[in-house]
Amino acid sequence: MRAAEWFVNLLTAYAGAGVAFARRRPARRLCGGPGGEEAHATTESGNPLDRADAAEEFAMSVQYQPIGWNRQKRIYDSVLAASVLLYLALFVGLGALVHPNATAETLLIRGFGTAALLLLHVILCIGPLGRLDRRFLPLLYNRRHLGVTMFLLGLSHGVFSIVQFHGFGDIHPLVSLFVSNSRYGSLADFPFQPLGFFALLILFLMASTSHDFWLHNLSAPVWKKLHMLVYAAYALLIGHVTLGALQSETSPVLAAVLGVGLATVLSLHVAAALKEQRVDEAPVTPGSEGFVEVCAVDKIPENRAVVVSLSGERVAVFKYGGKVSAISNVCRHQNGPLGEGRILDGCVTCPWHGYQYLPDSGASPPPFTEKVATFRTRVVDGKVLVHPCAYAPGTRVEPARIEGETVGRQA
Ligand code: HEM
Ligand code: FES
Figure 1: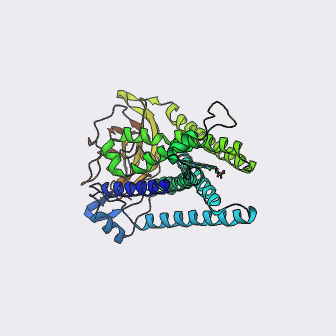
Figure 2: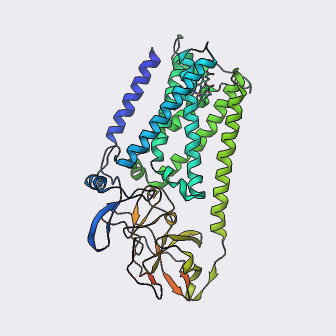
Figure 3: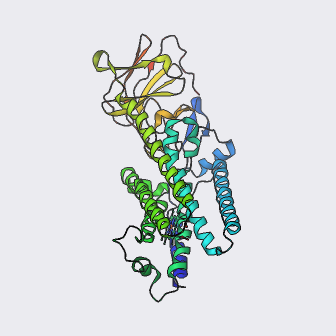
């Protein structure tokens, strides 16, 4: 029963921390439309929210909220919850039919564990998929909700396992987890459960710091490094499941599925990295006065950008309303690729979570304070040129005018 108490204490601490995180922070970016039109909120997928949601968001937009609910988030989370419940029901139901001797605890342990691992694969694939094809970008929206759900599933699996396998001895379950099997020198008998424990610890760190409160208080680079630990957790879990499967009579299907999952994660990451490498290594033609030729102006779709690597920095060159502006490609929120977003309500809108920046100054519209670097642009003979020297974040740079275009047309 000590394990059960420990679980309850952990959940209480976690819930308490969640409430404590609720502090001031914009939950959604809003950008006033041209000519002082009514404020209009957008999702990171670029879908405009309806006005009721926009007003609701605006009312709380400069305060930390545990979660700033809106229609999209409710739909996203409902689909997520329904999918998880359906998976668990199918897993336990079919498991009971196929293995009539298996106990409910065993089926639940396996259901929670496989659901968590499956979700982790989805989470790891969404990033590169979004880079390879814009149509996957809506999945990135609220990816952190997937992460927290995955942690809770992993936690349920871990706690059930600890209670089942270590809860009834005369030593503390957490001590038993590490000492009940000490064959660290054997591959076939390696204590695989501590690997799951350390993975769970990383997932806990990530889930508990997933709120924007932590992003801004830890600083974006520290937060990013912390969240890159997901790959360490993934490696630990591959070891946990592979070694666990080696030691039990678990069907080879699990090992095969895990192999396919690992190959999918790896190949998508390699494909996305190669695509980005092509941008970084694309040759640039030097123009006059230090400007660099980027592309023909016709190659940039209206209200969208072309991304180019200049002096090692990715720059997003936007075309909008007969003008061209260039800003850093890196969003201040979580390094999202601004050049893969579009201009909505006169603002460059990050495709990941909807942070917005004015294209000519790189500054977020008030009351937000994020700023990105800006670059000088020119349009000469139908070609777009950008100067590779960055201006300080938030510095307004006069946009280049496209000859023959009507200035002022915006999305
Ligand atoms: C304290 C942490 C953990 C402990 C003590 C633990 C324990 C176990 C045990 C005892 C098994 C074998 C179960 C059986 O054969 O019936 C197992 C398997 C498994 N675990 Fe964990 N685990 C932990 C964390 C995790 C986490 C965080 C994940 C995923 C995110 C995970 C995913 C899996 C999967 C997919 C399996 C194979 C499915 C199965 O055969 O049960 N585990 N774990
Ligand atoms: S809004 Fe989150 S990374 Fe840009």
